[in-house]
Image (cartoon, rainbow, N blue to C red; front, side):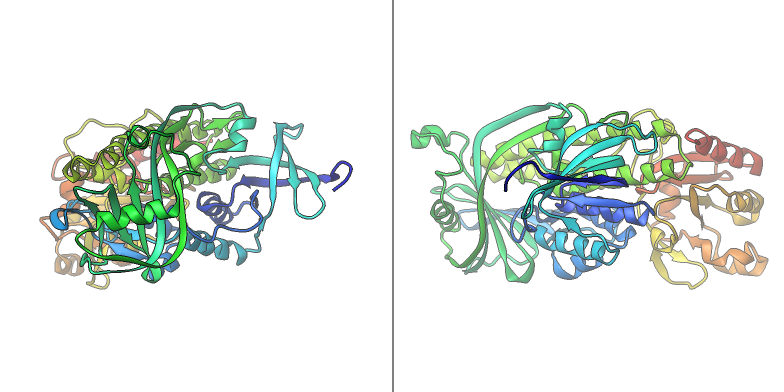
Amino acid sequence: MSGSPAKEATSQIDFLIVGAGPVGLLAANLIIQAGLTVRILDIEYEPNHWGRGDWIHGRTLELLERAGLAEELLSTGVKVDQITSYMNGELQNSIPFVPDEVESKHQYLLCVGQHITESSLQSSLTNQDVEVERPATVINIVEGPDKDYPVRTTVMHLRDEARSEQVDCKYLLGCDGAHSDIRGQLGIQTEGETTETHAGVIDALVRTNFNAGRKDVCMLQNDVAKTISLFPRENGLTRIFVHFDENELELRKEQYNRNKIQLEDIQREAKRALLPHRLEFLGILYWSVYVVGQRLATQMDAMKQRVFLCGDAAHCQSPTLGQGVNTGFGDVFNLIWKVCMVERGIMKRDILTTYTAERKPVANQVLSVDKVAAKAAAGHQSSKEYCRIVQEHRAFTTGFGIQYQHDSPLLMQQRTKAAVQPGMRAPNFKVFHYATGRKTRLFEKVHGDWLAFNMLVLADDLGKSKEAVEALLQWKHPALSTQIVITTTPADRIEKEGILSTMKDRIMLDKLNRAQVHSAYRTGGDDDVQAVIVRPDGYIGAIVSGSTPDELVGVVKKYFDGFAA
């Protein structure tokens, strides 16, 4: 390569994404679904083939399913129901991964290699004629002269003879990992710590007489070895983590670093931990060593909400509880629908400040939980402490218990005694579909644009509340996709009285577990109708109640007017 890189004319695009890991690829898919244009760059010459993040939690699967991106992962990965702990080969404890009270059809952990997740998302992009540009990156970011495409970037292509081009975009996403160059160019710092604790990881084909099922994440300890965790992967693979001691430096009288922990060290400790059982490695597909640490970017957006950091570029932690990919996916699902509605002229632009307001506290909590879990895993005193931490925080770490609590137009906060509140995930309860008589889950009958709001209309007695319900069903807004009625009124009475006869497909019967939908949301009197407004990312925006059509429609309209452009 000689001389300076050749330059091309300036091009324009809605989104420019830097980083083609799972988070960047998911963002690109959702952007295309929103009807916007996108280019995605990655500094690596080829995609990742093995290793890295491989836990996809149930809440993440719900979101992927809504976007039509979960099918291949579900058919490929291994579903894990529980975490079990062993001491000297004896079972000590067993904990379901997802709390029993969670209402979801994905009450498990899906173990699937990151390379498969990336391949699935890339395949979806290819079907939309979008390919990752490799190796390429952004080397300069400035404010551009075009108010419609205000972010001016210099893109450097590094394959063969280097060339650069100028790309003006509406939005730039930094999805380029823990050592994010985009974050560095923006001058955004990270806060947190990197410890001297290390862990080794192996993806392998193994043979063992350890009889744990292929439905468990197993944590093993004994008197002569490090703590290890072991769990199934796709295609008969097993992933093994070796949690080295916090005081490993003192024990070995030398500083450990990535070059000094070798594959043989990880294999030896894994075999010791399984004693008295036998462990043989038939083939090693991937191994690595990572340093345990937790770091959080001081900002997750820049340039007046035109540049956003997502995933590890904004927050990074150890793999101990499998939070990396899931938290990054949560970032993307939180952000893209908001940008979509801003670009459609439905929402005002300052709503984009809620991305950082909502996601940074979540990231901070992820790091806090990860810190104590990683410390317990490296401590080796007792697996009971690690299991206690998992059990205490599993509603949050599986994603189902995440709650947004800041004050914004997107959350109409109310102080009630109801089990479900604005800012929480809307539970996917089991109900009966009136038109077919079949048992289903609530959101399986929500069709249409997932990048829009939905409304659940709760009415105990449809005979008494018919007018109020009809008023809500007939109310229209460009941000609203589907309204569904949930009632405790018996099906034969609905049929006999001809209630909502033209809207049968939108009626759900709440007759399981003592009308669990009404029990969860109920805030007003028994005769009141409730409207539950569910955001595109599946979180509750508002729960309102009233007894008259004007009262109900008025408060629903007030919610949507709060963020109108």
